[in-house]
Structures are given as C-alpha cells and as structure tokens.
Length: 442
Image (cartoon, rainbow, N blue to C red; front, side, top):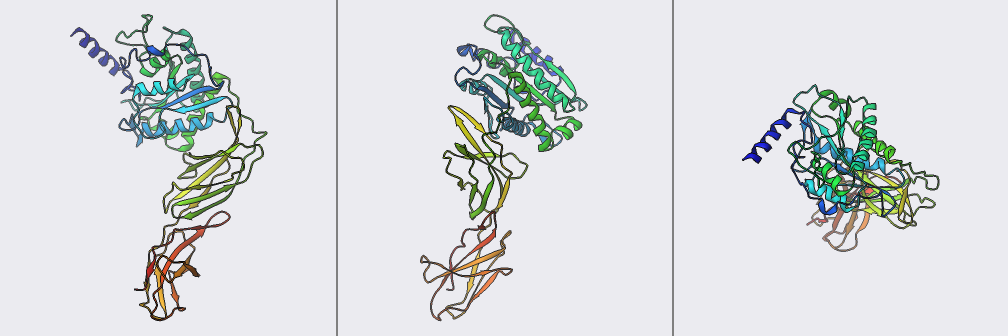
C-alpha cells in the first residue's frame, strides 16, 4: 500500500508539469535495470571507425503521440528522423540507423536495445511537445543527469546544447536544455538517483548518451504553423539536429571532388506496373543508390542499390498503375568498409498509365471497330491483332486523339483477336501501359 501511494503521488506530481509529447510513454519506473547486462561504456565507434548515430522517431503505430492543429506527432517525428538521416549521411565517418522506418509501434525497451545492437555511440529521440496551455511554445532538449556515469551525462549535455542552439536559431523560443531525474526513487547500480526518461536511462546503462529533442509545441498554433506544417520547415528542424550532432562530434561533410553527381538519362514506364530508369556513368563510382518518392518534395525512400559500377539501369517493379513517381540516383564509392556518396541528381518523374479496357464490334465481318476508354495521361494508342488468342500479335496502327480504330483489312468469316496499349511520354523514350486483355469479335 505504501508503495502504491508513492507511485500515485508521483503521477500526480507529473501531471503538474507541462504535458510533453514524451510524457505519455516515458514512465519513470519503466525498464529499470533492463540494460544491466550491457553496462560497459563504449569508446566511440570501436569497431568500424565510424560514429554510430541512432535516430529514434517518437511514438508510432497505435501510439499517435500528441495531436494538435491537425497534426500527429508520430507522423512528424518520422519525417524529421528521415530528413535528419539524409542530412547526416552527407558527412564523412558516420553511420545512421532509425529505430523505426515507418508507422509502426516500437516498444521502449526495443528502441534502446536496437541502438545497443548496432553499437551506438549516441541515441537521439525525436519528439514534439504539447500542452493544455496553447500559449506554451519553443524547443527544449533533455539530456542525462550527472549521476552514475558522469562522462555520459557530460557528452549528452554538450550534444543537447549544440542541437538547442540550432533550433533556437530557427526562431523557436529557448526553453533551455535540462535534465529530469526519477521522482519515485529509481536508482542506478551505484545507488544514485536514476534519470526519469526510460530511453535516457537505458542509453546510459547501455553505455552511450541518449537525448530527447522536443522540437516545438504541436499544440501551439504559431509553432505548428511556422515549424511543423511544411516539408521545408521539417527539413530545417532535421538539419538543426544533424548539424548539432556533427558539431558535437566533429564531423566534416564528405567532399565529392572525386565523385560527381550522376544524371537520370532515361525514365519510362515499361508497363502499367514497372518503371525503367537509366543514368549516366560516374567515374570512380563503386555503385549507385536509387531513391523514390510519391511527390517531388516528399520523403525519398531507398528502393535499390546497384553494386556494379558498370550497371547504369534498373527496373522498378514495386510501383502501382496510374500513379506518378519521382526518382533520384546518387553514386557511391567504397573505401574499405566506408562508403562515400555524392549528392543526389535532380529528381525526375514518370507517370504510369492504366491499361485500356477495349471492346470489339465486328462479328466476323470484313470490318471491325475496336474501341476503348481514354486513359489519363495517354497521348496515343497502339492497336495489335492476332489470328489466335495466344498467338503472335502484330501492330496494326497507332491512333492519336481518338478512342477507336476501324480495322478494314480483315477476311470475312475469320475470327481475330485484338489488344491495345496506351502510350505516353517519358525521358528518352515512351511510357507504355500494359496491354489490354485480348478481345475477339465473337
């Protein structure tokens, strides 16, 4: 009963504080001692020589996080994490991992254990703040207290300060960097008071600093409007994080003097569900990385890595008919275990065409009319004919501006089969739909 009263009192005290996007899940007494088996402080990048950064997009899946001004914390934290990863990968000597790459729920213990598994040097948890007081606004960063492993706390303090400085430079109110210790007497192995937040506490016990970045208040109309509602604004927050990490750990941007950008030289729809992409060869490249997005300024996800320098094309079969896609390509060069990348080429788009639905009216006569519904994005149509359903189809005609074709070169009494495909524009070639289902005049 006494223990229950202590816990209830702690919950009551916590409710007095500003409601953070983290408070709903980062409970004071979660996972205490979970990482005792890994309590061995790491030296930076002991294995690969690279700084290992783990970016943790807060919330996800069934846990939406804070909601305000038409925005969901879980969606924005993921975008910031993805943008931050892309920005950090412009630097030399760094490897970046995400605790989640999509809208999935990840348990708190698994977030830090994932970081521990990749031998993280630093753990950055990305969040947004929220308050019942809609006037509350600004940025703040939580870092480890000075108990137990003070060197980890000091590393966290420096990182928090570097990130906070950049966020404030974007016009966010300075809510300072801060620590928060357990309110119910949780202890570290040396009997000192533990950190309140589970990921900060778990990271310290696993041997690396963890910080929580509260970028802005999702509940504040001004913060939301200026810093959260556009891709440009979110990229600025992500860059502030990345530049803070780089400054704290002395990272330098990779120089692309020996590795230039490539250029997309061909981009066409081969069928309604496949895209062919080609690019120019880059001297010194070991391979190429292909990224794709649903919008020009959206988040580009990696879809393939071509590991041969001589291969300068790729067929993307993970696309959907009727949709528009944007592609970027960048070359990379391997030096031992280290990968150097050039910048991305300018994005290029392709619009996939739906396959036509056709109808044939002829009834074994000398003339037959092949008609179809117009396909959005198509500029012309190719009509093919065969003497048998599964036989060889020969092109009869190319039709522009019409959705029908009169076939006058038939033999009366003979059955014919027809197929049609839509044709649109691409880069250095046509974009084609898949062929329609073959139809006969019977």
